[in-house]
Length: 401
Image (cartoon, rainbow, N blue to C red; front, side):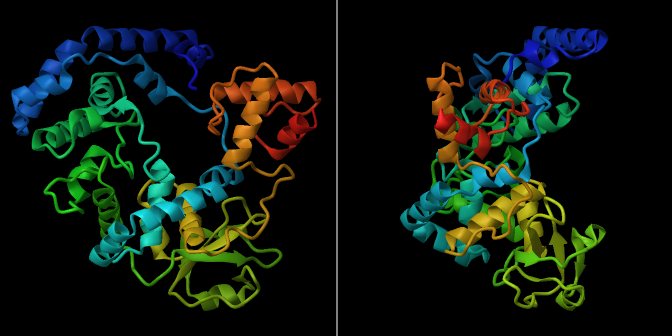
């Protein structure tokens, strides 16, 4: 659960707080006037007045969208917690079931775009948990709010709003099904509307590009995205490696690629000690530093990275794709003495906090502010540093009573 506006702004300097509230107030007051201007812009791009009025009827300036857009997370998630939440046994099992159920759609996408089905499925799993978490915020209201606010990316969001209105105009997706994140990402694999316009395809042959309710459309569109991002089928994203003692961290980097012979001469091997595999130039990625797991990455990792421009995100998809193939997950230990929790363990943690009288909401495995605050109180009562992190130590303490 997100913090309220006052919780997030309480620590701002008074001058900045006053400016923020004044800007928000003015934007809210002029929302209808802003919409009128946007209608002219939409008309110039081929959106009919009828479509615009129907799409914007009853919407209002949404303070929650602004709150979420301005939120700066106080808690930085360690890479091991991030990976444990996105690539656990539960998601692997769900993924295998989804791949079996929609095997033909995945096979068709693979054949059409030359992207292997396991990578497509891994994007699907990380983005929406195989269609289970699509987001509930109305795209038109969210994007109109951002387009009519003092947001520094206002022009960007106006472009996304125009793209959303074009989707409605064309009839690909029903307006009421266009829900997603506060920023406008939607569908089974969370496309932004402009990305949808460029890369979404009809995977089931019904003449529509419905990435919300059609799995064939969603997985084919994802495959097209990765194809355009220059995915090379037959080549892996990379693999886990073992670094020699004293490895220079400055030599690492996703884009600092060299032939495998270069790294082999430095003492880098596969994680099991076998020689590196020659798949062209590779870079060495060390998301937790030289003391944590390390990975050799090929140019295919760049294609995954382009989906969300974050190496941790790319690594989650890469490792999930391997596990869906039946391969092992990450072998090396993360550099922490407090192991991360799977989603099932996080639900257990939340249930135990609830039983002790803490209000953490529904035990769903999603760790928000309420859960972190409750963990801090438990940690203080145990004489532990109050981190608010959902780790094995605090869960074991709760299990011991």
